Length: 113
Image (cartoon, rainbow, N blue to C red; front, side):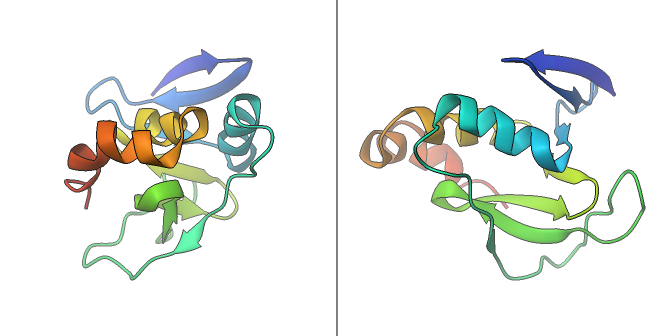
């Protein structure tokens, strides 16, 4: 994993698959810097067929949605796992209105599993 800094917040990115690993506060901090009026919310989603394990504690992470149903995995204690495009698409949701987000990212978002 490679340490990345974005708007004063540090997170890790896998150099091979480019997925991102953010501690629980880092995702909220980045979101808050981009969208201070609307807090980041995690909503439950149905469990996936294959559980993703937390890289820190090796327990199955909880499948959740970020805004606009971007699916991610979350370990309450250690962080949020985002597949390659999910971080950028999520942060775009903090920056642009929902109608524009669906127009610009809807087709990509429908490919997320």
